[in-house]
Length: 222
Image (cartoon, rainbow, N blue to C red; front, top):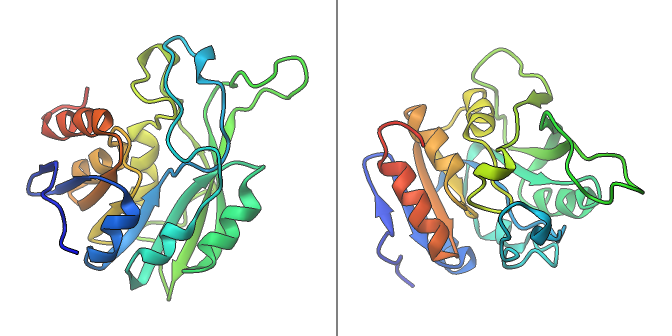
């Protein structure tokens, strides 16, 4: 299979619209994977200020796509998950890389969940795996990243991550080419571009590809 025509492309970013499982086998080697996949934690998005349709695949934990990625040696993998999906995603990441750390993203405020029976969830986890001797490009980073979540009223994707969070991860992580197989509205791609890195993204929902493409075309992030 040949790669589809990019949905968006510039000197730094190439974004494809489609199912990553169909596109990944034809991509070149990448140095770093940073992605927030559907990790099997389906949540009632209707409770948000703007209702969103559920993300495709978020009713299961399927990390088989990792086996389709060609990662350089040395290289790195960052994969978002939650406490209740951690073990399944660790097993998936370990299929391609040695898990070295579990980074905590402190969102700065608690989520909804069940306000009567659960502690207010204000963090997510990011599994970090290394291929070969992958070394940080800056002083040893902390495994707690404190970056405020995207305000609920500003969300354009139900699980949108802030560009500042992705920037914090990439700033400590070497590699010329960054891959996000679940690009959403493009925070990883935008962070990579702003840091002068090359990035490849794949997104299955065209409406999110459109938003991501507009973000890439902006001189200043909106």
